[in-house]
Image (cartoon, rainbow, N blue to C red):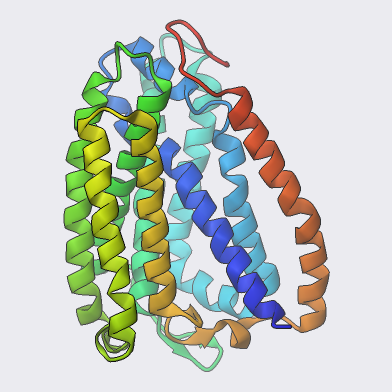
Length: 332
């Protein structure tokens, strides 16, 4: 049995779940300054207050799993991404602090509103930049990172940061359509459509830019028979985008949110087929970076116990706090 492949899938799944779950609350943080009143900002924050910290469990699982299961990949990727990773963590810390302090002050509430926005924006941009850095390739010699301190800072990685911001704002606005009172959500349909259009433009640009930035991806995308198989991904994405905008135009909140998640899933599949079997594109495969099988089996036993528990308490928290918020209602 290929235990390294199992862990490759598990860590990929953990990162995808994190992106989907924490994506909407980061998107809400980016939308925070656009709220029309303090009450609206209270409702926006209360829509994610019961679940935001549980969402970040998946980030810990993904990062910790990479360290334990693929130590060589961890040792290569971390030096390449130290700066954006530290900025992302500081942004997440700033968000967490703002959750705790915002409801406990009146005179300084504008400071914590700003902290919530800045933390959300910086964490989102850094996640997109790290994704762009991985896609364009990391310089590796032997078993160590061979690039410079600022190799992550390129036009392509910066654009990926902007693209992820558009994606998170779309996801966050669709979440607000489900959670906010009916008298508030009207303008969020327009916000979702505008940011969705920006995201579609970003997807097109990245799809054209990426094969030019990385020759190995160009070969994988545009040579037969791979091209015949991969053409299904843009077709599925186009169909999903069509139904997403149809749902937004017809004011179908839940369908809009679910379709935005499907768009994330299609993007994840595109990333996977573009880089598999590389864990560090295009330098280390998952089998080259994996720990010994004895360690993988030991950790897999723990994951088999803990993953169902994490999924269960996450599902329970979403179930308990389901439905729309009411004016003046909160969990703080």
